[in-house]
Image (cartoon, rainbow, N blue to C red; front, side, top):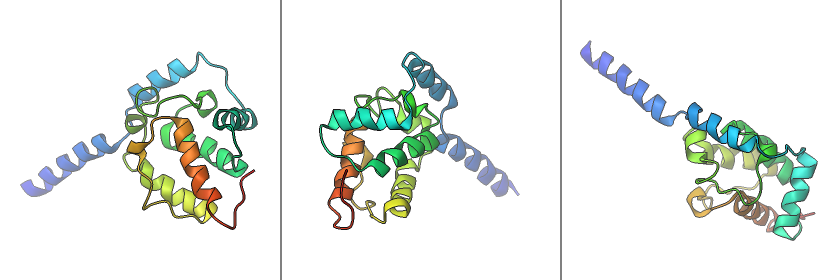
Amino acid sequence: MWQSVINYVQGLVAYRDMSPDMGIRRQVNRRLQERSRLSVEDWAELFIKAIDGSLYAPLLTFLYQQLQDYSGLDVGRIRPEDRLIEDLQIPLVCWFDWPHQLCDDFFQAFEVDISEEFDESQLDTVKELVYFLNRRLSSMDSVSPG
């Protein structure tokens, strides 16, 4: 009987630890409110200019939607130079498994498996995330950037 209660309490603590921090999410979104909100097309154009190269357009549409889903942040207000941890607090505003979910969603959308090489701790900015994913797509023979 007591073991069931202990397991239940431990489950609640683990759930809280793995859940997004809604207070921090609200804080980040309040800071983002100071910026104009870009449509997916304008957001994609901003990243194309920031990377100064060719980007696979469906990737930018994919990220615009997925980052919103994972983080609850207003992605239209996120800019290439935003730091994933310091500015956007991604580890705190997302569910704990967002990197795994990104790998799964990326595979479903583009049939490219990045699970062995994706390490979010090695990426500092949103621009670096976009660049990393674009390189994985452009390295595939079946997908040409543009």
